[in-house]
Length: 272
Image (tube, rainbow, N blue to C red):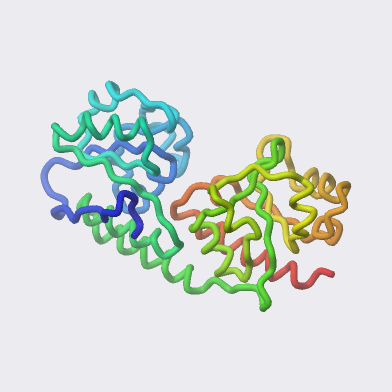
């Protein structure tokens, strides 16, 4: 089910009359609404919503963790789309409920959920044709993913260098890795993004490293750092970079990240 809170997006009427007024509470929600053909109807979003480029001109209502309920209410939304439930979103839900304004959560658990979620949004927002076209395109690309030859390779995904964080029990990313012929050695960790020690990574000795560099943390710098610590994957140049926005935003561009990671894991098979 692509939407959190155990409920799919309700199907709305075909678009006619006054267009919807949408507020998005996360960058991935913004990208999904654009993919569904309703980006022009977003009247408020969060600071890091910067894709597609048109999203940069949308008024800001907060930073994704904290947002102004009063500002949202003054925008007169007809739909609010978030990512994960939080104290802030639950409080906002209580303010929106008497007004008949739904707040839905776009939290896909697999790559297949992403096109399904785009279709759900298109049904609700009256943009079914555009949403279905975007969903079909993503489905074709997901089906066309080419995994590395078996057996599966262990893949360490570094999402922060200092302190060192990785992805753990994150079903969406682990589904992506499985489709590319990889397995996350931290997949059974109790939380989605655990902090881990260098010693733990060295002990697990992953065959491939995927890093998502921020700021000054370039691929070359991370390769050198891990090589200095003696990690065989870094010494053998089986370390790759992926765009952090593509990998960490559970929206349409995650398929871009999947294509890149599948190619990386095929390449890693050619290295000693």
